[in-house]
Length: 474
Image: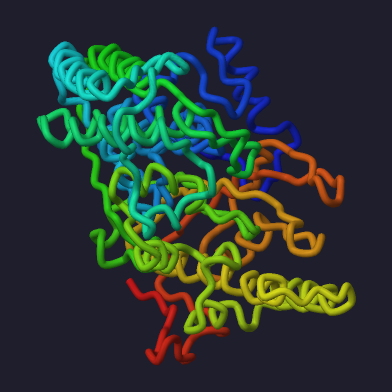
């Protein structure tokens, strides 16, 4: 359990975990996925996901036992949820991105019979291969004799959602044939088969690359589809044989907005929170999963995309809308207002006039207001004495104005009645624009369960036509 209060670690927590891992013969020395952590975690994962060993560190530090419940309100592709499941600890996940939510659902479902999963996938692959062969197409790149008919493709509406050239015509055709066979031979393994295809799509079939922004590399004329998909299925089967022997643990998942979650969970039902919310920057997080979201049918048109963005914390200018009102939650926060004012002053000084640049100051206020709204709602579901770990990072992407995300969120949390236990340095990274070292930190908080807490800046104000109050009463 935590014994040290209000301290900032000097040695990065990643190095502390590394040193402890070496003593125990484990590898936990980076943000990458360690080999021993690949079962379930490796089935599908955001490129910038935080590592499972970081979750384990805080599960241990917070004293989490099987009877406890851990919440990840920004669960992404389920690092915290999967790690809790592996350790027999109950968990709750909330996620607003449908593709990420789907990935988490599948990654904690260890019920499929491994050998039957492989057998069924091989039958699907054989059927898909026969269909391709009839059209003179093979799965091996560069061997096809040439299609004897028009290639399958997406509707213009769905194509418009994708990054240009994110997948080439021939690999897309093969993928659509495979998807059709998965649908036609639908079975209890349906979700696992689709998730395996999503992973192969991103890393082997498509032209996408991550560095860390998602982009498109030189398009390749052809790519294998069936082979990498079957390889992923076989990897899943090996993992399932091992994971099925793990102790059972409850998992409760919600496709929802983390800013409005109190109605989803019972009051005082959560013992700890381990999460990594988005950071305020110009990363459009929906682009990271756009290809697989479209091909798996989670997104069909621009209205679907807008609906997804509307459910997310406003962390970039591409998901800001006219009626947004989260900024009122930090209207009287002097430091956030100073930063937003400095961003706008610098924009005018530099003569930046694009629509996105004009929104930099506003999205900064909206982001921290949204996080204040989230932290306020969270208090209803926390047990007194609950610990929280938020992995966040500094940013300087808005005209090189430094945003110390961790410190600002810690100050907001304190104003809501949380106790700041410490700020652990997770790692540092170099800002490309300013060449400054940006801190990625873990903000460790404690909810004492106070009787009444008020944010003077927001009580009584109206948001989207409704009167909002962040008063908290037990």
